[in-house]
Each structure stands twice: as structure tokens, then as C-alpha cells.
Amino acid sequence: MVERTVRIGSTHGLHARPAKLFTQAAAASGASVQIAKVGGKAVNAASILGVISLGINHGDDVTLSVDGDNAEDVLDELVALLVTDHDA
Image (cartoon, rainbow, N blue to C red; front, side, top):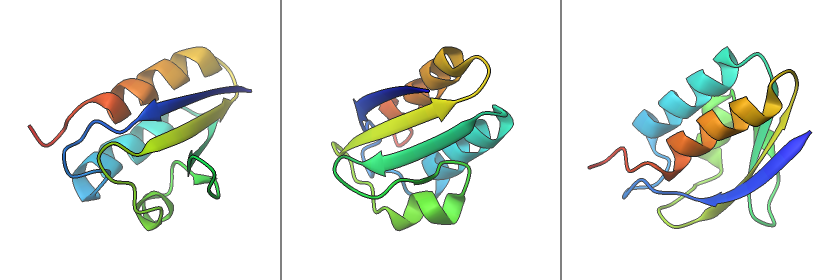
């Protein structure tokens, strides 16, 4: 399992559109992926309802945990989605 903490880049946080992009990528990866606000409860990163329920805003720090084949590559791809401003 690999883990990384990153800061959310989207100006309006992880709302519907960026959350959809993120959860689809997590599901397509085939790996087990969890996301949590720092110090908070982790949820399945492939669940749009789970991700939106975290209430992740711009500038929040989140921790991603990935377990599975190519975990480092999956983590890099998902981190890139989270740090990108999809609202620009």
C-alpha cells in the first residue's frame, strides 16, 4: 500500500464534476483506493457519494491510499487529478 497527502487544487473543491472525474479514474484503476480529509474518516475513492460526503474544499489536505498492482502509478494519476484546478 502506498499513501500520499495532497492539497486540493480545484477552486470550488471536490464538487460534482471534479469528484466524478476522480471517482471514475479510481474505479477504472482496478486498485483499492481510499481518500480521507487529513485526520478524518477514509471512504472508497470510487464512490461518488462517499467522496462528496467528505465536503472537500479548495485548499483542504487529503490523504490517498492505494493498494494493488501499479499502486504508485495509480497514485500519481489520482494525485494529478486532485491538484489540478478543474474550475479554471
